[in-house]
Length: 359
Ligand SMILES: NC(=O)c1ccc[n+]([C@@H]2O[C@H](COP(=O)([O-])OP(=O)(O)OC[C@H]3O[C@@H](n4cnc5c(N)ncnc54)[C@H](OP(=O)(O)O)[C@@H]3O)[C@@H](O)[C@H]2O)c1
Image 1 (cartoon, helix red, strand yellow):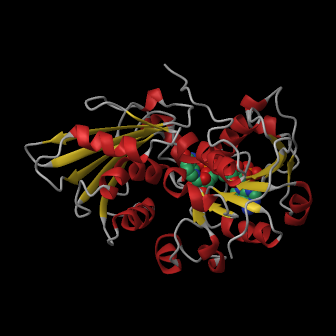
Image 2 (spheres, rainbow, N blue to C red):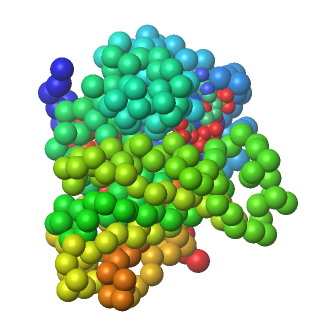
Image 3 (cartoon, rainbow, N blue to C red):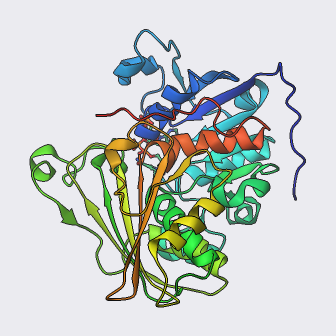
């Protein structure tokens, strides 16, 4: 069922809660929402941190946020809030989202639980789904490509970080039929915060600080079906991608480099750049750099911006599309707030950091 846009008059403020507030995307939501001019953040929900002051676990909030972490109670949140951000691990999120939706709340889910429409594909990659009947209700929240649908969505599946960068980079080329949908290769690099706050050996400082390595090589990363679903919808054919993620020794940032075969041997970088600028003309979060420029994760760190660029290797007939984002902002929390803004009729970039923390 499609619901109607909620009427927010200019004086209204949105009351929101964050479930999973003490994680990395949770704290990034907090950073953005405390400065958002139209939002009152009134509840932080957790599990192991219940009863503690949120700022005790998140030192960057000390002296700014005085909320105590509360246990999840959908009925209580429904009485007090208009919308809820869920920043929970996949699998944990679906039952909580289901309950919140059962109480009529608008939910913005940062996990993968509602990003795939096809239950079978979800279960193949993630295991059993706790609320499959809600999959059809969810709208994929890549704002630049689904702005209209988001205006009436009450369950928004905020895209993953690698998919955000990769889809934004290649979507204009597929949409304008400048490249073949066959044989796309995505080489992507992520900072360590992409793995979340729970300590793991892969993210242990001595084991990642001095080197760069690929992981989940050979079609094994869970973001593959999400990228394929979005790009298949754009191109109109069921395409497959080769996707190799890498862990690089930095805290934040994703650089995604997509290799695609030019549909026409005369294609040049200017035409690719023009197609991207046309598609993203009304998208304040996307900046298409001039041909020859190299997107840099440092130039978007802390901002809700995606920097894109295009080059063509005339010798091989391959287009090289690149995107740099901050995985925690445009790749997660910032994008979620961008979705909230669109959903509630606010200006799309309201409250979102536009300038990076650079250098
Ligand atoms: N990190 C990224 O770059 C990134 C980017 C895009 C999307 N995402 C997705 O966003 C989601 C959150 O990621 P993250 O990196 O922020 O994870 P995280 O740092 O591991 O934090 C997850 C939080 O969820 C809370 N939690 C877990 N189970 C819960 C439950 N049943 N009820 C209430 N709270 C619960 C925990 O709170 P307590 O401390 O109170 O137990 C924890 O703080 C994941 O699905 C992830 O895939 C992450």
